[in-house]
Image (cartoon, rainbow, N blue to C red):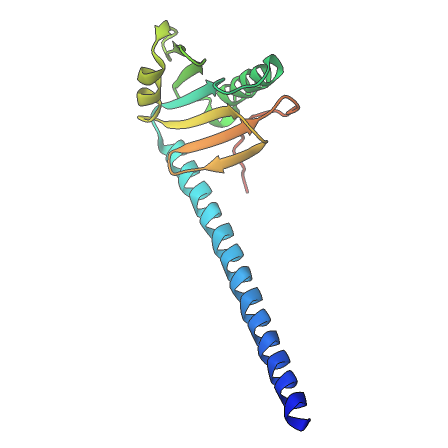
Length: 163
């Protein structure tokens, strides 16, 4: 009888230890992920501010309705006119499923570019891509991807913070 109680206490004790270790691992993974995301964001903005040219991409591929496309375009226009990017020459890309329109910094346009060509060119720049999806922003080393949906109602403008 005493051994049964002792076994139960040992099992409970080891169960609690396991739970504490598991919780500690979860917290560590969360904090590490948060740190990595902040580092990606820092790296991206460093690259953006030092870039000679940037690409702003309004990617309609996969947009389920015209309202989502409108929100993608409004976000792209807001980003393009942002004070933080005022001195940056911008290549503006509008992508549909089978065609791409490019507006160059010198006001030339190409309305018959292939999507493959545009995808290749976009990857040569530090870029801001606005796509359909659940609203969020994802940072990569040379890309900021802003996802919008048909209910997104926000101003996509970048400003420079000063201390």
